[in-house]
Image (cartoon, rainbow, N blue to C red; front, side, top):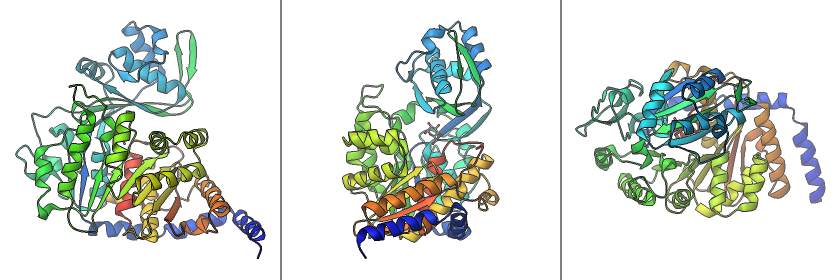
Length: 493
Ligand code: GLC
């Protein structure tokens, strides 16, 4: 058959499968989710390091913001100025909230000063405390899914932090004497609580400021982070040393927490030395077990020098890398891929992001890359990677179910609720992204059935694509990426 004909035939083929057909097809694909969950208990140990913190979540509305501005006689014009994305004064904190509120975006700014921390505590307060930080969130998710044991690193672990770990024997950390103990029961009394304020606001709320009215276009959050220890990637010596013992060697190591580092830290030392130090520790944790997998969750790393150093020293040593749309674009930026960055920024769709992943795959030579974007997860991996494409697909599907459960119910702190979303259908948005990607690959690389099977391979890599379940009115979105990346990997069995 002439190649052009073949292409026309396939395009027709792809376009003729309706969303309704695909819902059924993917429901069938997703039916492995309960079995994958059961398999997670077979994982022989997992280390989650390095960042756990306290998330102090508060919902505020425009009236609260206006009242604070009045109470502290803040200059309203200063609050709408674009300036450093950092919190040095209480005015900066409010400026950050306003900045996110008026555009409906999510950002995280760092609080450097203890007086501002005290002010936030006093004036903003919180509605509830929950586990925060990629390391802490991953540890809780893994423990509830039955991984045994989960070793979680905490730069600080006073009882107020410890109580946010689920109360289970399979989730351990080190106590003040350096002994591995159930994390929930530890109380390192001399440690400082590390608090991140998650300040949420609602779509449609209207804020009057400096003679203007700002209507919030999308429910979202602003994070004000006071975390002197995780800012410098502080690593607890007891934890670092104890896990070098053979009896504690873990099958999977999930790394995160680098995103808060800066080129120069507040004590004048260099951020890159902290990355280098952590790499030595991780090397000591690595076992000779060829099956051991080290995954790095990129998270949003603002400092370009740190992003560069991470890419060149750690990202090329790990087995697996996880990121969302923004984090992928940020990596492409430090790789010098300006055109692709512009393309992805203009349209963060599956086609442009897939092209970005190809570049990153080449650059890092990482065995496995995983993108979690809105509606779709994509995994690209080397042909001989120890997890097969279909195991990946099964892991990613379970991740989509549990992430949707978290979004829909607000918390996944009990095993009976984990599969709550399993009867929900995959999103139309995800199917459309997958359809476009499948078509693009068909046009550029080769014939594929990604739209129905989610798996495709050529001579250089395997690709696994899973459309996800989207929840209409999510109760929470914090920690979604961490949950998705860790389950996708760990449940891929
Ligand atoms: C960032 C925030 C933390 C939050 C986490 C969720 O690390 O600092 O507070 O829990 O993201 O992924």
